[in-house]
Image (cartoon, rainbow, N blue to C red; front, top):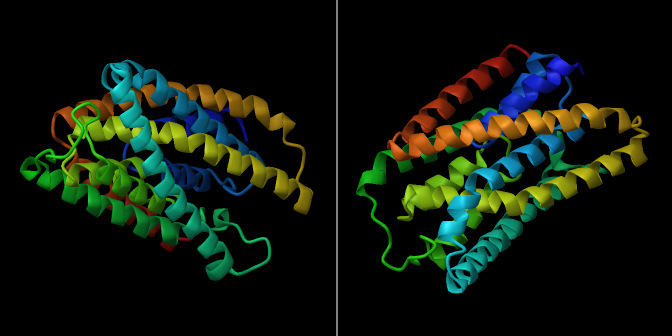
Length: 289
């Protein structure tokens, strides 16, 4: 893995992670096109650090907005914390429940892990199409949707809306291509949450979810080294840290672009893109990638 590979993957991750188009799908396709193995320990370590970079981009970009919206009073802060907890609990139940089901029932092999499916383009394509349809529906109906009467005036949503957003986020965890941000923001919009508030809440959830995902990946890497005698990964830390930096910078640019699209009412175009991307991924699978 060269420095050029690291920079390219960091830019792909940084731009795609914070747009509703599935960063994982884009990174996997980029790795395959460059002749790399997405399941190799060094590549997995790089991906973990790329996610770390984009997580910090989210914190930096949204910090002032969160201070104005969520930290303006003790009552508002308590409300958003409760809503984030509710959404995260549903995400954990659905997401990790699905992972357990797939590993134990669907794969049903010794040491089966959900990551074994992450490089399969024949699964990524349909997942991209599914989230594309959801984004299209949300974007085309947003003008007819009004904020729910029960939503909290400080946080922009209520407990029921937070619960459903958490459920949909849980569905995104096991399936590469089913964009987490695209699915959660679209769900919020369909439930009557303002787009800007749905965006803020979705990325606040990402800050909670990312450390858990990093911890799982670190555990998986250690387990892989123990079981398969994988090589020493210490040499991969330098490129991975550099990748995190580039992902952080690209992530900030992506967030600014996303906010502009939200403000201009062009959300449905992300759905169109996901459908086109699904077709491209299916073609790549057909020709042997």
